[in-house]
Image (cartoon, rainbow, N blue to C red; front, side, top):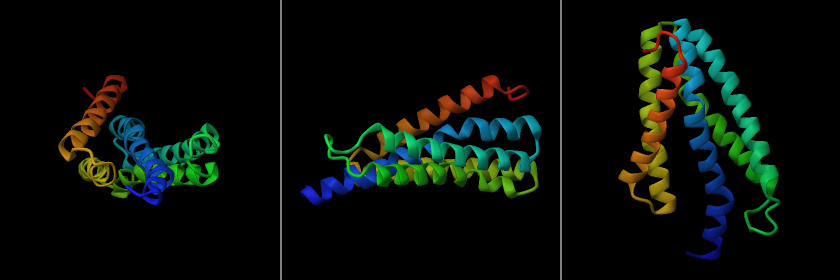
Length: 160
């Protein structure tokens, strides 16, 4: 791997992956909990939009403030923060968009399908850029999704 490729991975791909993984996983519980409790897709959409935006801003600041990049070579903190924030928002909003469908069950099914595609995409990105096993990457992100889903079900009245 060339120095240029290493910098690209460290300064661009890795912050994007942090954001995409965080956005895809951390927003599952609030969005699906609101959908299940309310049976109102619009409420789930608003919760998902707010969660995705809030998580994106939080992750942007967290990444940007965590490291100046001078000692670690991770690059400009503002750029890393922006990449991470956009990735987080993107990861959260993708499975939020199906809740624009006004029919509860249809919205829930489509959102679930989007989550499956997100998990596959995350595994593919890990395989593509970080040379990890696609199958083990898919297993890890799926396990994380299952754990988060179980937590959401445990705290959501009427979900069980």
